[in-house]
Image 1 (tube, rainbow, N blue to C red):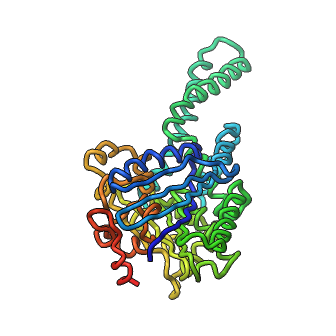
Image 2 (image 1 turned 90 degrees about the vertical axis):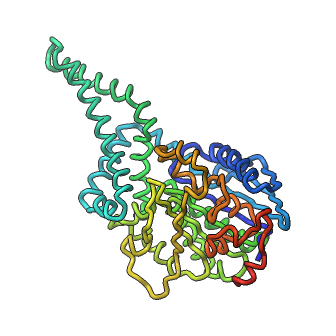
Image 3 (image 1 turned 90 degrees about the horizontal axis):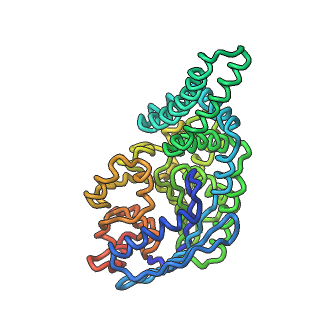
Length: 403
């Protein structure tokens, strides 16, 4: 099979930069993709179809192939920015309640057992928040304690100073992603538990658009991509699409859900996250939809070498066919110099799954979403030389042999 037309539905993680920021990232990496492969490609400007969806189109031409991609970006920036703009006292109360809940239910310990690095990330975000509060309180005490005034006045000075120090430290906390991380975990935990959130309508919208896209018949392949926290939303959207149309993946176009750098297990391990585990269980036994979970040891912010089904407490099913667990070697994809530069830039490495390669490798996000090979072939082969010739020509014979 050769993909001539493709639809991609991309669901971001908990990232406030939104469609505009992701389009600029995509455009920058698109230039690197063209250079790496030597292909002719055009990229449209971003179009904002609505407050929910942004779209851009890519047309790519190789030596013996041509592929068109419609890239639909689910805009979650409105909900995320609204969350981050809430009064700090409300955010702190929600975060402290989440921290207490993770300790009391043993969820934090389960995360550490599954991935010590994700456990450290959780502990880091919590510790930085506690340190932020402690420094503000210490500042208030230092200023108010020696003040030669009445007790009530001393209390007022202490409170005012504490709030002032807390506000002054906020730019540092924001630069270290303290507020964003601690805002992310509780909101997404609520979604995993089936509580009403601002994400529900957006996820249902993606599910409807996927069903519509299959019925329109203008694509050879549909990819639903979820990055980071967006992996949980992508799985839920796919499950809702299957519920709306049980025959969704039985005919053309082929459908694949791709979770990259997923932190979904962090939420699924909570005892109350039964709704999320139901979605995972359904997709793990759905033979008509390919689910590929792309993990990387070089990414500190994901669950690498981890089974996202059994590892979150879902009993083994003899019908299980998903996910295909794919370990992504970043060192094979990017130059040694660039890898060295981003060695301690954990946030940058967390985005490598959806960025262009410096070298041709078995995992290539841009060629996967812009090229002629179906994603199922990439996932099965994991060998770029088996799919493409040295000049970038598509080895269609390889696909025929695989079929």
